[in-house]
Image 1 (cartoon, rainbow, N blue to C red):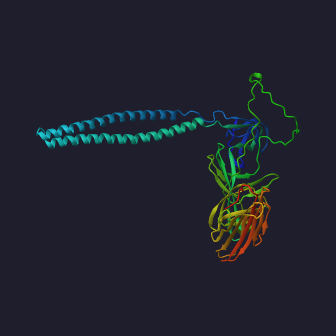
Image 2 (cartoon, rainbow, N blue to C red):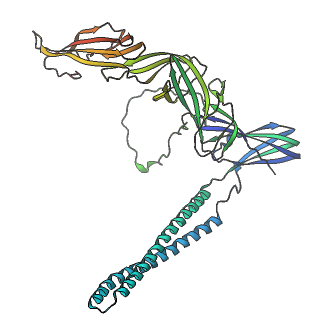
Image 3 (spheres, one colour):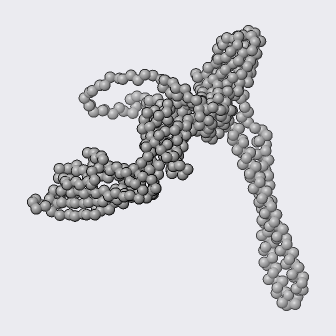
Amino acid sequence: MIRLDAPIVAVTVYPGQARVTRRGRVSLPGGDARVLVTGLPTLLHPDSVRVAGTGAATVLGVDVAPEPHARPTTAPDLRERADALDAALAEIADTDTVLGTRADLLAGVARRSATALAQAVARGEADAARVAAAGEGLAGELARVLGERRELATARERVLEERDEVQRLLAQRSSDPDLMAVAVDLSGDGDVDLEVSYVVDGANWESRYDVRLTGDRLTLAWFALVTQHTGEDWPECELALSTARPTAGVAVPELSPWFLDVLSPVVPMPAAAGPKMRGGYGAAMAMPAPAAVAAETAAVEHGVTANTYRPRRPVAVPADGSAHRATVAALELDARVDHVTAPVQGPEVYLRATAVNTSEHTLRPGRAALFHDAEYVGATRLDVWAPGEELELALGVDDRVRVERELVRRSTGKAVLGGTRRLEAAYRTTVTNHSPRQARVAVVDQVPVSRHESVVVRDVTLRPEPAERDELGRVTWRLDLAPGASADLDLAVRVDVAKGVDLRGWRD
């Protein structure tokens, strides 16, 4: 049997999985030989293992099995050290008990003797200097004992820290999984470059974006954050990011007949009439959302249903779950910049950029950091953004454009005939541009819409005429304001309510 040292040379990361490729050179003695590639993670899919290579050899078979004696599951040295540390802690506890008892004894002696010696001095039966010396002796002995206890506490903390570390290493050793091995049966003579690849769970990549607006240009940087806990570290190697989703089973969906029947009452079955059904329909394999990496702009390969991105430089990704970032693409897009506000909801005016994806990339869902020039204005989440698709991005509140909406008239009365109640309201919205540049502002408001014949909306007044108005009552004015300019927008409405009807939804 020949053991082959086959390091990782390439990794393709999918959402939720990865295909790992190892490569190494083996010298065959002639005839049949078995080559063993060890140290593979337990999360690999045995049916995904593929063997290829170059050289005068023929692959006779491939076996995948747990690696025998992959690593020790016990650690006698660590266990002995843990026992020694437990013994040291027990000894420290005993010593501390003895010192505590001695400290209590000295403190008791000091309290009792202080009173007796003071009385003896008062009666002239004892020398004051000798009494003071005795007191200092007791105090010094007590201080020495308390100092030893402090040193003992410090030593105990050190031993506890070391014991915790040993226990952690023991737990890690005992929980380490067995590894997997691939055995390749070959027939040939001479040097053969062998390549082994397999799909493994526990890997992921997801998208992150930096979106920056400068003037009328939108710069979008697309990053990938790659994470993995597959059980093996990936060294610096060729890394590819794929949007494909390998699945455990792929099948074209087929429809079952659509039956109609008469509903019949269900007669409950006695519990003992048959065996209990356990389990259910097979759970679909969950696929984590995509992730991201770090490097120069990646080369892209467009497939039929998925794309593959290859960062320009190798990337190392350890199996500790930490994220490693690589640049996927950088886009420069023309943007249409304006402001939008809905003063009926609040006085904020938002800067908005509208852009069309003119690139070849279908951008994946992911979190985006938003910048206006050099200022960070917030974060949002981008959905899938296909080539040719238009997207709106809110780039934060612009305090240089102000809006104020006020109620200028409100009345409640009765019509001459029938006792119908009449409600009237009028609002004025004022928009002012305090910025040094012309501002295009979309002001969104609404008029009430009746959902009952007893409530009739009449005499709607909109000045100036809005650019858009829909059947749900939404109206939109579009303003072009020069620096320092302002505009007034008026909305008035009358509502007639039938007698005895309680109106809901009317705003004061």
